[in-house]
Image 1: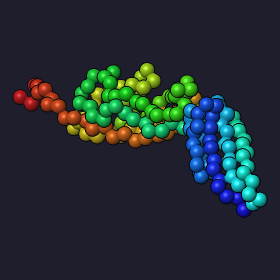
Image 2: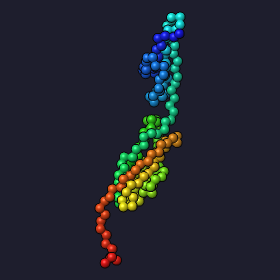
Image 3: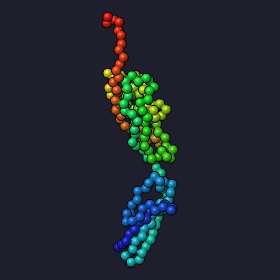
Image 4: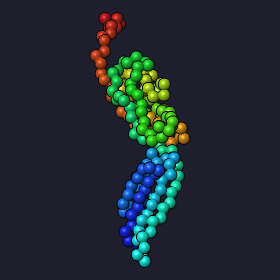
Length: 171
């Protein structure tokens, strides 16, 4: 029977975790480094034993997560080309140079918006509050290895005071 088990997880010059926990969850900062586990214990004969093993941790691509749009409200009758907001996505691989593309996949707002300069959601046609007080867009963010996330955004259209119009046929 083994007693006094103690595990030490380390990288060169850094102790990552030490104690009775036999498992360690690799972090992104471990990628590209050798991680060593050293095990100290007393065997059934009462001898103290120290053994270790190390492995090179290789980074794997992670899917993007937490897709966001900086604004969810727009005034009606904004000129075509006006910015609704900016898309952002979190991805552990961004620091490794991973890039993302965004597209409006579907939704009642799809004809009213487009994505310009990779992240800017812009007005593609005039929006009239009286016809569409809310619009939905389903946005997909895809990384360079085709992993993706989709999220539905509800856009609220503000009702502005429309200027009066004159129709001579009514008089």
